[in-house]
Length: 274
Image (tube, rainbow, N blue to C red; front, top):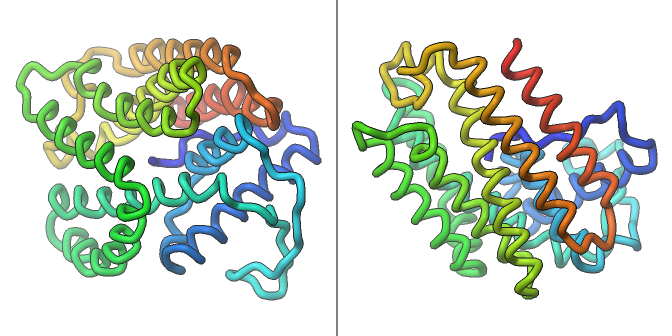
């Protein structure tokens, strides 16, 4: 994922922002401990949202501990003592980032392509470990990559067809967070809408580069893409919020609500109007 699922920091209470940082730092720690130091550099806000969501429908993080930060030994960070609910989001991040490297090797040319070829071995071992632990996530992502390639190769591919693989992959990933059938149905819808939002905003942000390099982009043949993307993204936001209200949230509701009700719109306005 690409870092578009962010908090609206100015609208969070101080204690809520501190708790958000606890989850972010714990996810960073788990990725480094379970996989590799390099994997810490691939951490994004999207997976912090996934970790928060997973913890919110389970036991959450009450007990915390203060330890030194790996990147800055002079600084102490606060971590969750129990990080069991963060292991799935950490594995998902590692698996998705490996497939992103493979995709970049296929799409890029020249020096950029060479850089991704050189870093691939550093991503492969952590990926294999994560895929062994969570084969269902690996299957979801590999199916998503195949479906995305097929969609983009279709001459009649439109916005819906282009966004559908990412949306379905996220919906499948969100469903893995719960064993409760009623919750899973809601998570399926929430994940689909979030996935569609991520694909569309990323495609719009890449539009100029894709035109320059003659790469696929569903907005290339559209007139007035800015107005089109805003309508599409606001629809995704509204549908995400509707699904969120149906979830049985035990903890962190204000933080998750901040991301969905305020953060998504903030990101939309910053990325589309810049």
